[in-house]
Amino acid sequence: MDNLIDDDIELKKIRDKKIKELINQMNKSEENVKVYSTKTCPYCVMAKQYLSQRGVKYQDIDVGTDRKAAMEMVAKSGQMGVPVIEINGSVILGFDKDAIDNAIGKN
Image (cartoon, rainbow, N blue to C red):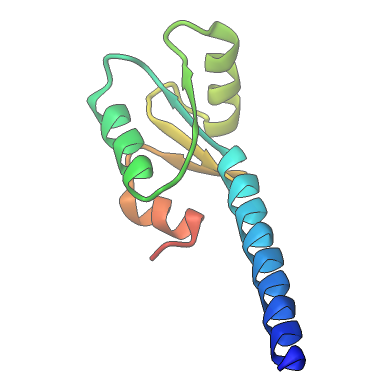
């Protein structure tokens, strides 16, 4: 009986460790998602809603009020239009569901 209890405790420890690892992986990927947008851009709103629906946390960067961020966006994307979405270093121009899904690994 004691062996079963010990095995159960060990399995719980392994499960808890795996859950923590998965949460850490999710948090790392979430930190690497940026949406360059403006307040008046409907496609920006749709892109952010889509990311939220997919369970992806992101950093919303308003290039309409942050000139430095706007310059950073243009340097990364080569364009001034929004939205520009950066996921783990990959730059997506516009609201492209397939490209977003591929970049976050949720097809």
